[in-house]
Length: 114
Image (cartoon, rainbow, N blue to C red; front, side):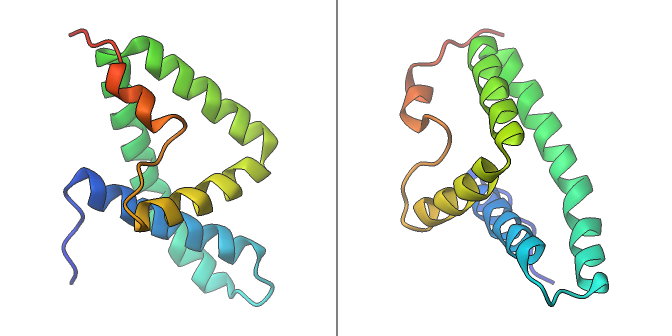
């Protein structure tokens, strides 16, 4: 069994791989119901845990940044196609060692409070 990712870069890469795979399966015409169920069973609870943990942490240390990220996520979800495009773009960028996110360089100057 492959070890779970336990560094920021490994977690980002793992989620990008699984997220793009899920999106590709969503649009594929020959996907079995069993394959789709297996992917959902694995991804949904893990994604929920990660999103809650990361948004809660971000809100604690950088509330304005957390609000901006949440607003951007909301717009991406409403648009729908932004999710597919962003995941694939970020997957490619991460594979090339380029920072990913809505505004990766903006995080360098984020306000911090605890």
